Length: 278
Image 1 (cartoon, rainbow, N blue to C red):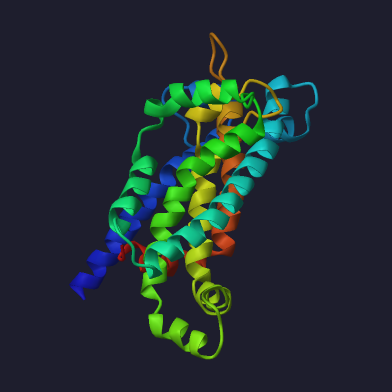
Image 2 (cartoon, helix red, strand yellow; image 1 turned 180 degrees about the vertical axis):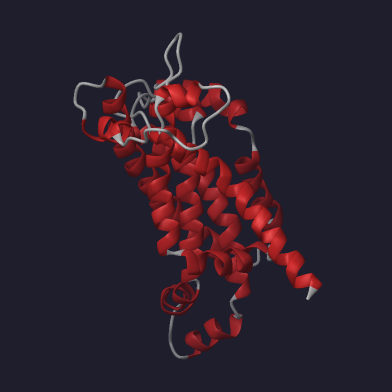
């Protein structure tokens, strides 16, 4: 009984710790500027208002709000395209690492993983020069290619572990029945790996959706700016609009939350199966 109480108490502490910043973001988005700057701080807004949401979503005269709307559109295109390409390439590579035996297999997989673990600041200069030479600066295509460079190793690592968790006998039985290796992959392995694929796609989407450094350096116009850069532009040279930044943060969090809510039952099982193999 005491152990269960401890577990529930720990869960409540963790939930409060995780949700408190999001709750404060929501309060800040509907509070008046005077409430945000008052001392002592007003946790409950005296006059809550949704005017900032209306301003961000519908005001055509607000330049920062227009940038935010364009950033939402660009982020959706860039993140979805990056995940689609990375999954298309990474799933076949992960299957090869999981099922085929060749020299330096483990070392090559770790090499791919090391590219994912490199800090972005270490690569930004070489990537900038490469994109400038290829005329990909300030384009969504350039961002998609850059994001694929770190989402694909993530897909390789997670999905290779997940494929190893699927019994090889199922694939062998399909091949005895006449399937080719590719046929067994599409008819047996991929349907069984659906939860892992969805979980990997979701986390890849979050990697691209939240990325800030590359988007800040490689984009400069509404054609390619993503949502983290758009939210940063609510900060002026001499002032910071905390309310608009909070509103942008709430709106930016809605698409990932909606996707996570829809596919929540695949997340834990998908990543747990792929994380323990390698």
